[in-house]
Length: 198
Length: 89
Image (cartoon, rainbow over all chains, first blue to last red; front, side):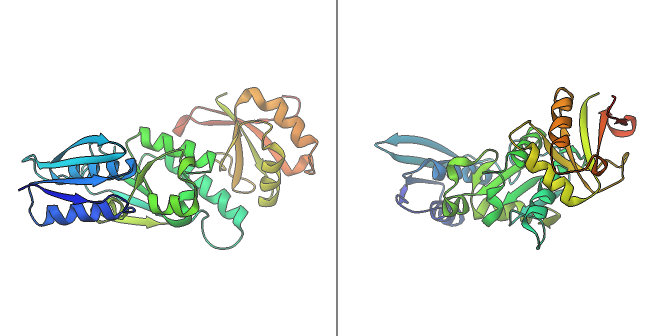
């Protein structure tokens, strides 16, 4: 009855895609096997968003997540809701490590000042999404990391593309934010009333 | 005084100063406050206890004294006050 989805050895975001397919197919109970903690975190967030419980057990480095529909309505909003009032709010998408094109040093300064100013602002985004070279900011720029911590304390969700962190070999340097995947990042864009792209 | 900022007469001066200050004292960069609103848009923010150290580093840098200015900042929002800190202060 309960299907087992073997996603061991699959790189992000494949385990989430495979689980999402089962959810879309209406399966109320299934098990996903993965072999890394990033996938476990991503799958747990997927379960929470889709109205499933996901009990985790570990055996010899293999994590088994047992998905069970819990009857609650699917909820796209994260548990720690942004401080922004009701309404879709806005998201900030950061696809590069400097602002604009031109001088890198100037662009680095502009990016740091952007996050300084955003952290002091009253009108906060619901989420900040880092991809490609943008992930070098939460995983390497001390000043940006400090500003992101302030923003997270105020309820802003900070998602950092795990594929990108792995590509640049800097996953161990992440100073702020949650390692995430295309599903969560796209969901945040779709849920926002506007997306500001840097 | 809550914190100090240094403003610069040019963007290049602001970038050069960061190189001089890096590793010497903790600082952040921020846009120049509207209450000061002169000079270049990049300013350097640091804690008041590092004021004399920052002064001496910049005095020994390639920047002329006329290329930067120190301010003491108190409060925030409408109550924010920016006080120029001259060499004597």
